[in-house]
Length: 97
Image (cartoon, rainbow, N blue to C red; front, side, top):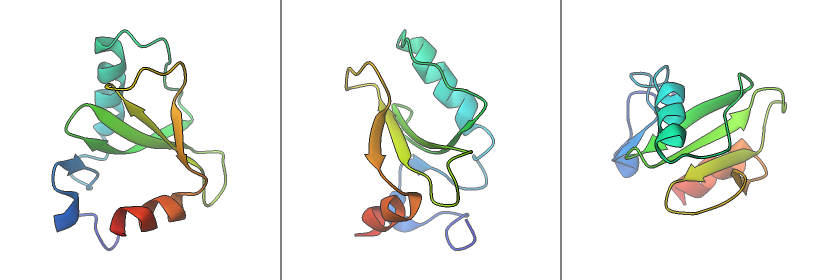
């Protein structure tokens, strides 16, 4: 957030900046409800990024300093949230790569 919290060019269309960080969970809950998803978010899950209103990424707050990252994508039918990275740091590096 220190380096890219006000926006970064290669993530155009993705909301993650300080401007939206406090709205992301509400938007994620609305997306799950709109899609009649059986999965629900808990108070322990922190949504840190959403792309164009149809997918979002989050981690569990109690999973340590470098938690696994999970994703919800409305275009993919899954019974559970999709684990996309074992660590937040690897996930962020993969975005840049």
